[in-house]
Length: 258
Image 1 (cartoon, rainbow, N blue to C red):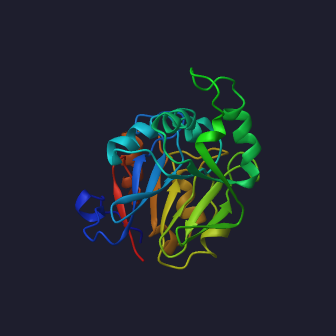
Image 2: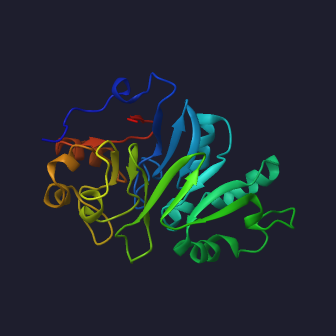
Image 3: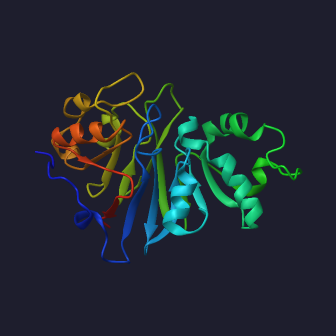
């Protein structure tokens, strides 16, 4: 059986500062953002290491949590509810005079990201600023190493092939990004210790997982490891919990085994 007990701060907050945690800044879907845009931060020693996605409101949530700008960022895909705050970040980073933000982008997405955000003229009123000046673009394909952490990428099922990517840190976590069920990945490529953070709403559609999909597509040992996010609102979160699954809410930190 999968876990049905509600997650509380006491069960998800790390007390050991040497452990890794995943901190959710937002958990909502693009259609309704009452829970904030889906974005999470990999922490070590309670310090931010890597921001995953940067939709509307993410930077303010990040600053509220850490009183700084992110220094490294991974993008799962290029829908605006996952990248829109990059336009704000390029300006804030330039005005703050900080080092370029390391921007890890799957190779398939670079041209699309450039088209959507970097071709607009005059990103700053002062002029003379190019979107990319605030970033160190690091193209990534099957894997990448960041600060001695070995991440892996998996193409997921969202709109079109090669359009969206999951982020996997073996032994610690798997973050699906937006996706339909991906049993071919989760059943064959997990080490056994990862917490699996998975896109899920109450109803399935051609681009996202729904509650009924989970037990249909995944074996029980995978369902036991799931933490669901990217749902519409608090009512949806409660319905997912009633289905017996753990749910991430904005502000939740999940300690990662390692």
